[in-house]
Image (cartoon, rainbow, N blue to C red):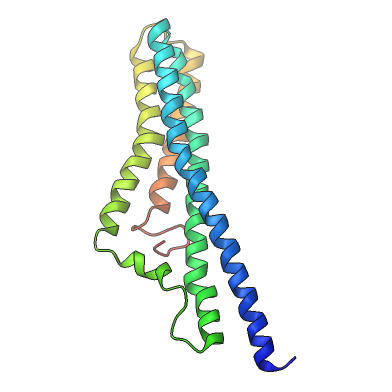
Length: 186
């Protein structure tokens, strides 16, 4: 196969890879964003049930649920960012070299230059910490301050508090603009 034909085939493969990655990224974004709504619904249901029955021990269901949903949110968010990094750092430059262009997939980097991006990321960090960490920790405080606290459930609730604190650490650690786990900013 001649060099030009090979270049066209490689270019088509790179574009197919790009499309596949963008499809995965789109699906992950939808799934990730729905996790916030699911978390809000679960929190509302558990709080309503605990308030209706007067059994604050029911609030102990919130930390494990929020940790699982929060971790799933965080993992999906990291994969979404990883796809973007790969497109910007690997796939785009390879296609640009092949095409003899300065750059490819300009939007991948352009939208990151928005002057308010850092502010939005800080607000998103606060929302993530509130939804997945502050709410379950508040539930634990309400349980601890209530009547009928049992020693066994206190031990369980302390373990839950540690799990929530661990999740909070990872949420902050992976947060952009503070840098992601690989030491790069998103």
